[in-house]
Image (tube, rainbow, N blue to C red; front, side, top):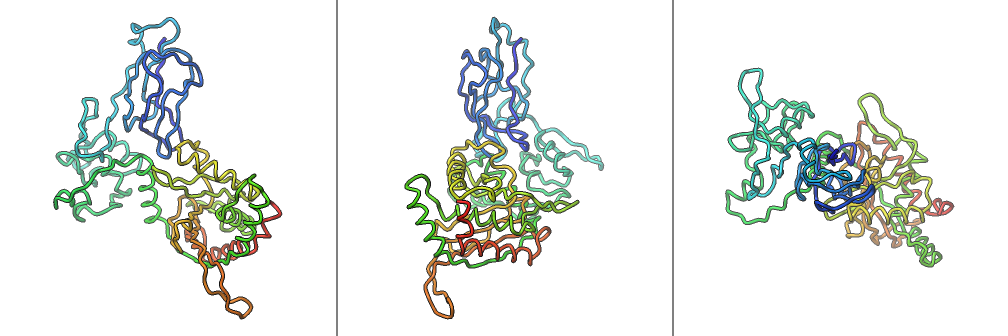
Length: 419
C-alpha cells in the first residue's frame, strides 16, 4: 500500500517549516537513509531521510513551499510492485498555505491557500481570520476580537496575532501608532527591495522582542587586562605546531565555564515555581550566519580543555553557517557569550537569550593606559558586559561572577592545567 511521507518535526518547537528543496524526483527509487529533501526549520536547514524503501510516486508539496505544517503529507512512496494506479489509495494531502503573510507584495495567492473563516465572539460580532491566525491565537491564548486585522477587508492574518501579547497588548505598536516601515515607504514613494524574512529571522525577531520586553535586564561591566592571556595564547599555538589554534574566544568560553563552576549561583534560569541551578556550564556562543544569529552550544565546557573547546567551536560554527546543526546542538544552553571584539567593537550590551539568565558581551582588546603597582603603563584591556535577568540573578551575584571571570581571564595559568 502506498505510504505518505510526512513533514517531520525536526525540533521540539517546530510546528511548520519550509520545504526548501527536493533531492529526489518522481520515479526515483529510494532506500532507508537516502536524503529526500531539505527542510528549513525555525533554526536551520536540515535534511530529511527516507525511512522505507520504494519509489517516489508523487510529490505533493513543491520545493519552496512555506508554512507546511508538521505531519502534512509531502510525497507518496510506492512500495515494490505498485504503480501510478495505486496512488489513489494513499490519504489525500490537506491544503497548505503557499506563501507567508509578509511575503513581497507581488506574491500571488494560490487556489490551495486556506480562506479566511469567521470567528464568533461573545458579543455576537464575527471576526474574520485565517485558519493559521486562529491556530496561533489559540496556542498563545489571544482573543481574536482584540486583534486589529491588516489583511484584505480587515481580516486577521498570522502576523497580526504574532505582534500581540496574551491579553491583547501589541508588542510592536498600538493600533493607533501609525504605519509601519513598509506602509510609510509606499506612502512616500520611497524605493526599496523587499527581502522576505526566513523562518530563522522571524524566530530571532520574536524571541528578542519577547526577551527585551518581558525579562528585566540590568547590565554590569568589567575591564579585563589580557596581556598575559595573549602571551599564553601565542606560546600555546607555537607549541601546538598546527595541531590546534586557540582564539581569544576559546579562552573566554573556558573562563566563563570555570567561573560558573566556582560560582554556580550565576548558572541559573528563572521559572515561576523555582530558580533552576544547572549542574554543568553549557555555553551558548553566538555565531553570525547568512540567515541570522544562532547559538551552538559547548556542553559541559568546564570539563573540556582549551584545545577541545577550540576544536568543537570551529566544527559547530562551520556547520552553523551551513545550516547543518542538529537541534540538540543549538537548543538549550545555560549561559551565552556574544563576542564582537573581532569587529573592533569596544563594548556593548547584549539581549538575554531566554530561558537563560545571563549573556556576556565581549568587546575588543584595546591598548590603554593602566596603573600597575602605582606606575602608569600600557595594557591591552577588554571590556566585558554581563546582561542579567534580575528575577534570577541579583546585582551582587552578577558582580561576584564577574570577579571570578576576571580572575580567570587575567590569570590564564588557572586554565592551563586542563589544556
